[in-house]
Image (cartoon, rainbow, N blue to C red; front, top):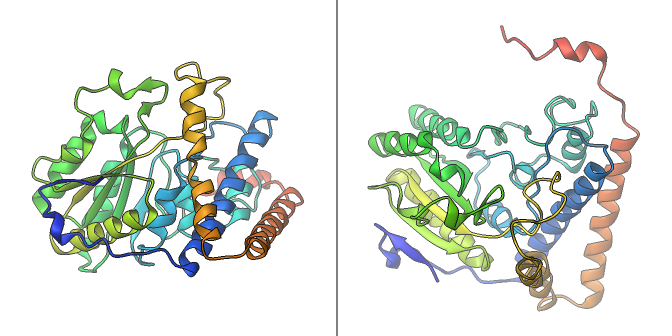
Length: 329
């Protein structure tokens, strides 16, 4: 089921179909990302990762589909739950895990941590709820100013949707017809607060007033690819659009959570039974033999373990790194 707001549904072409190359790539990358997240959770629980750490377990379909649509010159920005976006924007296993563990090999030389990963395409996770929406609107303005045919994908959660600067950013983007795709990842919980306790109007895709919007779930990866494709082209030709992707994180709000006191075990287990990684494997098995699936899994695990080993034996940041990257001249 897809819902449309100020969008003619006949203009959204749902034409992508599953094929062997697609399902292989999706499963391979989703498995790598899941291994990163499970490793991060384990190391955090052991005290090897400091600060905050927010995982994307359960929401990976969103990132795998966006990866199929992104142009290398598009820009992406997100919240503190940013490992998935960082990964699809080309930040490696070693760079992500190295950053989490505070190693010099890390994406920000070990100084940023889980919430702050960056490269030329990914403009970071951000710790201030909703701040990335204003910054992402600025990315859209920069792309428009440079007269390039690229888009800023701006990710935020259902909790951030209630922040004032989000509405202000929508208003500016609409006025100037900025090439921005706003993506609300609605996992139905603002930290530990259920959606029903944070808003009376959870139709986030309609909150842009005159900005068109589309709502769908994260369950069908081909639909996600097609909707992202449509939204990207719309942003280039006509200006901003809002996507609301209803999803669910089967992990805690952060690795600090000791139990899921705010939701039932039955609810979580039901969602885990429909896990997107299981679905990705099921899709792959429609096109590949058991032996082919096993080869992919072995390759991914080997690659992941090599990356982790490289990080573990890498050096700590030099003490003089404390004085670097502070000012820019």
